[in-house]
Length: 258
Image (cartoon, rainbow, N blue to C red; front, side, top):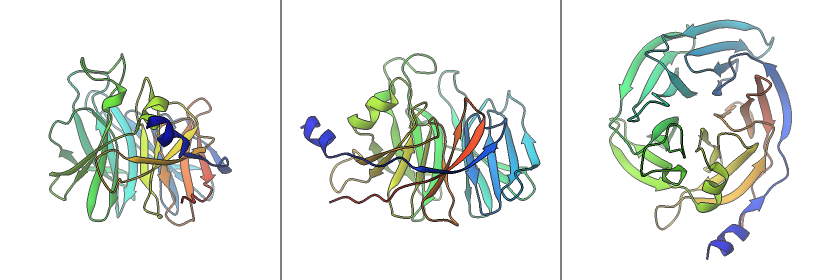
């Protein structure tokens, strides 16, 4: 059965790289809006003007309080970030919120303990969607490994309303780490990245059951880590190259499934 599912996964043409922006802070991920790019490091967020490529502002937090910002996303008027205590144990996570206009810290959202470490958050259909990572080795908890990576849906009061796991075809690509990035596309599909591989996994919610459906894989120029869609453009996804400390803009090919 697993072989049949794997055979049904499409490998699409590589995404077209449309921009590169040098950013020393491009270590964990990137957020983007129509005018600015936000490069994310463990305890730092740097704001870059998309038109000029110049850094225009930055926020830095105490590493003891913000040891590991995993990702950020521009959601409405706010910059919403997934934060964890990685690699400390037991795993603890929170959602940290900033004003992207002024690059000031606004508030923290305490979420109930989940089986994993929060790596990314997005918003869709009046709900919050959050991924909780698990790892083999460093940062992992005994009894759990990358196979326990989980997608959780919350209501506006951060009450759990749904839980999904990832298919074996994607988990095998995460190993030994987990999902570092994810964002809902305008087509209603979930676009997910791992920790290291230059690939984006296109997923759908299942009609039956609780395992996400892997419909396609897209080779990209970003080496895992957190990603963000440019909502002002068609199928333009931003990611990072940790090795080059660059923010990379990529035009994704269309996903056509039967």
